[in-house]
Image (tube, rainbow, N blue to C red; front, side):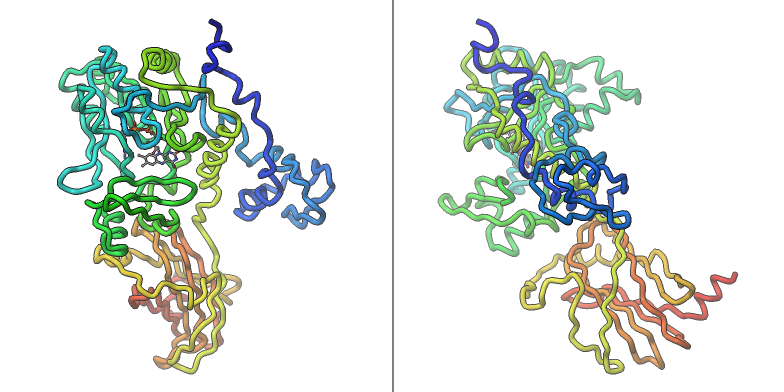
Length: 498
Ligand SMILES: Cc1cc2nc3c(=O)[nH]c(=O)nc-3n(C[C@H](O)[C@H](O)[C@H](O)COP(=O)(O)OP(=O)(O)OC[C@H]3O[C@@H](n4cnc5c(N)ncnc54)[C@H](O)[C@@H]3O)c2cc1C
């Protein structure tokens, strides 16, 4: 039987069938490249637009006609990420699949567990590194070395927090296991790939053991303590009552109390998202031997990207021996994987590491600030009124710093640069700058920062008044003042002349 007759192996067809989608229009180019400041003003999009609908306005491409969503400007732009390889890495075959074993109850198709069971049952691996839920602390991930199919069955399902899988891998090698399957998220896989390829005195580990890297797709991971706070304190749902967590279509879904379900937008849990995920560009575990995820396949199935020959042979054998059911990934499925992969890649453009916020002038009676209209803010009425915070979070917020204060633009503006050194995303911060005159505040200016990303610097420019002596910066949230700092004009001018 040749490959086509078998009907499940195809090395090139996803690329062949991939077509440019209507999604790739000027709107997307504008959002990902132009508005984020990544555009280098080369003018390519303007020059090749078949509709002649774009012009350069200064250094910015502008749409002046009708965009037909042909995708040419998006594809031609030097800054967009468009090739399949750039989005999901190299792979030799792509499938959707599910377990053929009734006893496997996986997160999606149970592909990871069934593949490992096939390898284990046939002596191809002597251990697997998997992640289970802690028995003492529900939903806390615990990395384990398992050596039997029975244990593998207990390890299926996704735990949405970072798991220390590498520790378990090193322990397994130290214990003498020599053929090991390692399951991990892209960051776990990257750690092992780097240890395997970089000469850091790790020969004693990696010359001894063969490791099959089974990567999971991963868009987000959350701090375990954060999930606890969100579900237990904010929603009143004990983690111990939750039987399944899953993310699909931008929703964080749970099943709990045997017959109940709940769903929140992932954005609602954003402040509990692991900070490292803001910097991660890899959806599909590009350095794995085989990658498995849910996007791109129907409910109850997993999407599989096979990247190495050994992994391909293992997968085919598992299918031929009744562990897995596989069929080719179709072009719509691949397109969904590519769309999500792109969302993760373009995080590098939307990180918003540095902003200049223009403050809005709010006249105040001396000392008595009036209600303000806030720049870029959600309206007061829509704001959550019962925002709760743990003590730890309050303490972290203390790590907000004024990293620079100086006069700019011919000494007409006070420029303050603030850093969020807390390592956490902070939501709902009010920044207020006022002039101090004999202890009274005048000319108070105020702005509202909806989301302040970790290590992001915010830059504020505040117009100076004549004969100014002192300025006051106040940063607050719903629970009160986080930082209050005065800036003496004489001291600042003195510093400059020194
Ligand atoms: C944090 C996280 C985020 C994810 N985000 C996405 C996403 O955005 N889009 C998407 O398509 N897929 C995502 N996935 C992958 C998806 O949830 C499934 O793991 C994948 O589809 C495989 O399903 P399965 O039924 O074949 O696996 P199963 O047969 O259920 O096996 C799952 C395997 O994953 C291991 N595992 C569970 N949690 C962890 C963990 N925290 N770290 C390391 N290994 C773990 C288990 O030990 C088990 O071996 C994510 C997975 C995780 C852990």
